[in-house]
Length: 277
Length: 313
Image (cartoon, rainbow over all chains, first blue to last red; front, side, top):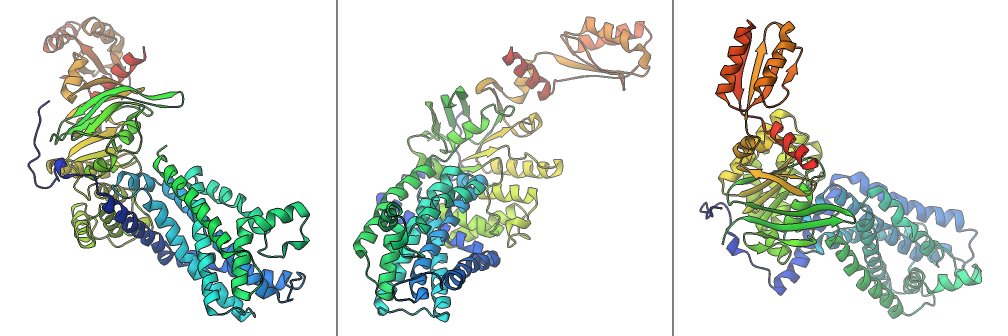
């Protein structure tokens, strides 16, 4: 076969290509993720109704729980909105992550993931960009819920710094859990399935927890589960930081989140790498 | 550094299904290689292996001398890919799609924007550049997808059935764009189910079926591989059809195809012009008037059907 040397200046000669250095790879993990984050956030600008409706739902949850269940649920100091709000923002941050499962499954279905995988970009970037965009949206929704909560009577009881720490913890929690959703989205590969599969494991964690009600009235076995699962632990810490109730150690919450993070980030990236079929 | 695609005995199975049963092929630098085959032949699997989306079970593939499986990151900077379905983001504008791809190739934002503008002009998308892709027609999406695949001026470009689902006019336009790319020095591997497309675009054609290469050559050599020319003949009086059929059977190498509605025959003949003269002579002896007669090379369709049916036996 005749070998023809490319002389046209328009094509970059193959000899110029090098594997990136370690520093460069690390840097690209950040910059590529930000490019994808920006792309995902553009959806909210182009489709404002997406943001509106995905915001109405948690606010509606807040109002429904506060006024429908509020009277019936006995909490220690008798002020249910103060009990509810820290819990329900944890639940909101968690549900918010489900967008990652559906969004990634859609990208897979449309062949966008194939294109991204054929580009010399960081292997983590598509997933990180997805979860970061969802985290940005979570920040917005959580702050909005605190605002609405304030209107219907919620008050921080434990100082400004603790309140800020609580919000940071909620956002970190949402971010970590969105990696679980990302993994599910890459696994099931189909948006409708991702929608359903994304939520199945969420409900027991959210309802068998201290998010909406104190755990004391639950049957004993359920109570043991409810008090020791990560969602309750985080919700208790957030509640403690916001309104001063007794709670588990902040470090225990951070340990849980770190544990989930170091498992699900590599797992999701591994799934992304082999998502070709 | 050579700029070829070299595939050596590449195998890939999905569970028990063998998608590629040891495929070998080469593509010359700056030329178009057409990978021709029916649905499920293994074309897409091969493209996915060459574009680092899939790892082969065994065998070796190199692009510009770089091993695809060993240095995927280097390969990715070198290649462009446009898959079977346009992989562009519907919610972004055409321009945003191209800028994003440029940035993901790690061009600066400024360079990405300049390149996007250049491509929008080249692919006649300037009017629609700032509309979301949702509003694009099928042909425009294909063009944008093709533009996205060459953002980094790849040395080697892969197009997986680039014109599937397009109307003939849009398809011809796209062919024009594809020819331009090769004029720029890009090596192109193109898969297609349409023989016409391979015939029109490819310098070299590899025919693949059931995961195996069953023929390779230029479109000319493939056609002559079938051997003989085809005699086409039309009679004005259709009542002679059975008679002509018998006569042609003795001249040709096989049973002639007849279109009874038009009185048109086609038959593969062994001796070219001699066979044509013979046909004229015998029909003249029987006083059967010939409306039209011609000798032609077989179409790639005929070649393809004869090769694939041979490979099934």
